Image (cartoon, rainbow, N blue to C red; front, side):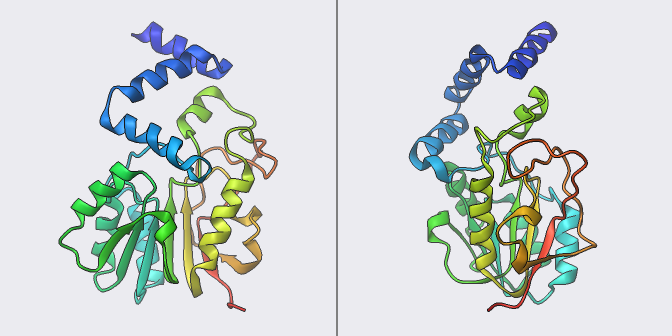
Length: 238
């Protein structure tokens, strides 16, 4: 098994087709994997992160910071809420807020609906059905593509399979839905919000955690020693 894993890592780094075939076969073997495949087929260019993995209290320090910064938030959006664990964590910190989870993967969306069924102030929708403005928007481990593969393969350029324009369009759309002074929280992304077309409408908060992992420039190439914030405040809405 150790030798096989070593060969797979080496093949992934070279971009070997047989590695992709193995990964495809793994997806075909489970309901979760099939949902990932179907999501990509049905939604194509709208998909960012393909992996539905999540868990409760995944970012406790960030959740606590935002709860301190925006204790009176009335509407909160979890963009890419997966199977709903993030919604549970947010409810603990924002007991009175309306919380909306948006998820493109149909199977994950159904699981999130079941998980929050008893919470009348939480709803789960398809991203195309997001409506209205929000005081806080979370996009955590969403605005990226196959991060583990990128790290293992030592990718120096991700423009072919995850272009900056895709990230940029999403950030602009989320920023437009923020109320004045509202907070946009982006963690585990492969590009910087500071480089987006919405940067002039957002103020990075100095106390926010920094992005971890490799960060890429708008041309898709690895940015050396790039620093990126994770929490931004919406400037005055024109």
